[in-house]
Length: 143
Picture 1 (cartoon, rainbow, N blue to C red):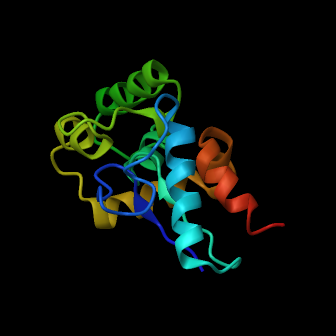
Picture 2 (cartoon, rainbow, N blue to C red; picture 1 turned 45 degrees about the vertical axis):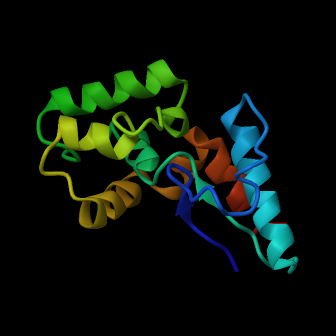
Picture 3 (spheres, rainbow, N blue to C red; picture 1 turned 90 degrees about the vertical axis):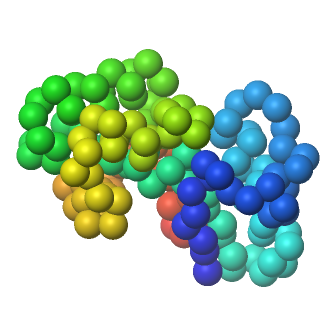
């Protein structure tokens, strides 16, 4: 069993949100995931909160040809990834979350059809290589 929720705007009343450690976002999200697992209380449950949104994986796919209209959109995504230190670290502010940036760079982007296509084009191996939180979650299924 698992979850797949965006960490960005995850409800404050959920387990672990009120007492998240400060600092590193990986530590913060892992804390919430541990708290969720403790509340469920089943060793088979492996929660995942996507850092920061599913669109982080779209940012990881910025090199995929034809993903976005025009090369300037892909270049903007790549610049954001480089500035943040990785696709999972692209800012999660209300106005600058990955989904908001995608809509700004590509107004025709639609989360439901375009997101999965981008992730499929990227492939699991390449996504894992650039998204350490995703990789850590997937490794729990290999143990």
